[in-house]
Image (tube, rainbow, N blue to C red):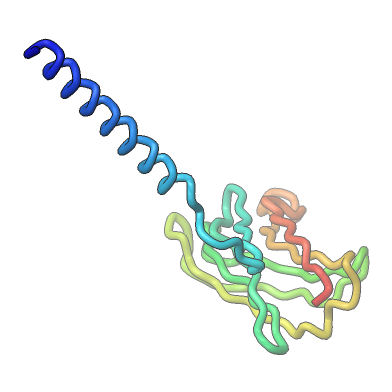
Length: 139
């Protein structure tokens, strides 16, 4: 009789552990409701990191960090091959990662062929180097 009671208690413990394990699996598989809000994509290369594009009511905002010589880099907004906007930006110089925020009007973006570039001009030959290309979809 003791053997049957012992075996019965072992079975109860096993079934209880299995039930707890199943319940734990069920709670860890739940990921919550699906959101229609798109994830923010981050862009990076050797000298630019944490670059994110956001929108306000009438502006597009590009933020991130740059690690560039004397803290100077350039940016341009293109529609195909046409330059819509081009300028330079001053932030903290390397080796620091200087933060930046660049804004431009949404109305500049009229097609889905628009791209934003962050780049540095080479001290050696003046060519664009470390170019980070970011697609900008039409709002």
